[in-house]
Amino acid sequence: MNKQYEAIIFDLGGVLLNIDYNLTADAFKQLGVKDFDIHYSQASQSGLFDNLEKGLITPAEFRLAMRRWLHTDATDEAIDQAWNAMLLDMPGKRLELLKAVSQDYRTFLLSNTNEIHLQTVSLILQKSHGITDFSGILEKQYFSSRMGLRKPDPEIFLHVLRENNLKAENTLFIDDSIQHISGANSIGLNTRHLLPREDILELFPAYLS
Image (cartoon, rainbow, N blue to C red; front, side):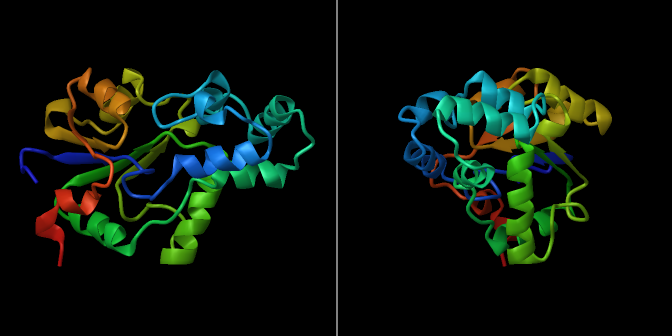
């Protein structure tokens, strides 16, 4: 990793945490949404999902809107289970990588994550690694639903830079979604697009034991 960088900003889903959007699309299709992947995917999503990720609607309001969309009386639990189906696991080697990299760089998390997913991510981390989030490992973690902003909007990147006195030219942002990379590039951040089937571990060979 280039030592010109003073800080590294990591994405969560698809970079640290394994996810599969198809599992959520399939789960909602089972609940009656035939064209779910048109409304929500890695590349784009409709206003309902944007609003949830920005914290502009509550989880309860999201579930109600989903019931109206589904034309069903699906329970909160059924909706949450389908919505969370995409969330898989975080390999221990990635957690160890974060700990090691954080010894040499200022490290941050910046994720488009809603409150329903955050609860499940916390449970995944607790079950696998005995932690509920990345505090104590990363300097700070940012979640879109608690900021009222989401990637790829330039303002979310500028907020992280300003709050932590970071310079874009000395900061690296790693994400698996090309539209987020483009948003980061627009304000001068160095970026690395993590490609499908590429693992974050491959970017830091010097830190692998």
